[in-house]
Length: 286
Image 1 (cartoon, rainbow, N blue to C red):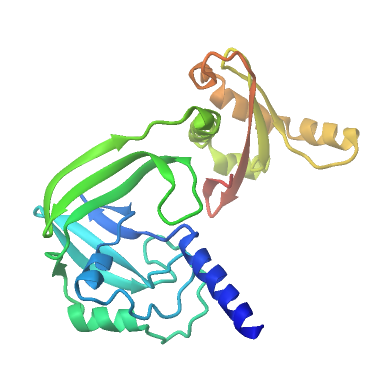
Image 2 (image 1 turned 120 degrees about the vertical axis):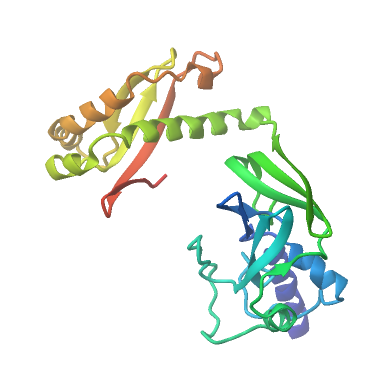
């Protein structure tokens, strides 16, 4: 009985490792750091017969036990740094690790012995590097399976860049509404953020949760607060007291037209923006 429980636990655990979105590697390309949905070090481990090496203390979001930073320069791929999963220097992403502060896994020890702290030309790697771009158009809770609006592909042969191209992924009909909904939110926030939020916060405390209705012609029809008072009179006075905020926000977006996002369906769209003023900067917490 105990053996059966242990086996069941291991099956569920390792299934979860594979079925969780993975923290990516990172690639420095043309002076910018982008996510990389490919892990070239896995090919290195395969070539060295080390795929079964102990990955140490990791989380389901980083089952390989490390994250690597790469750079493409002078037409070649270089490994610049290997980091233990946890707080990624540029991304600030926490993977949920509970490891000891000084704990070093076998896979990291192996890479240390192989590469030290040197920048290494990745002459072992042949294949495609994939960097996602733009909005997610289909989220899949597994590995790197989510689909983005665009992907940049890099064709590599023995560490040398052969070519690069950008692919646009087709949005399936069932994802149009969600994708357009997100585009509307992005556009609204971009325009609202242009307001003088420092003054708005000092005078009105405008950072709050707003609902915005887009009418059948694609125009902004209404802006209102999302309140959670039980009494209709409390909700009424809450909106009246902060009328200045709503007027300024509506004025900043009234020129926008969203008819192309409605795709000629003549329907009303309502979106919600959760705005937060933090350390002198407006944030969207959707």
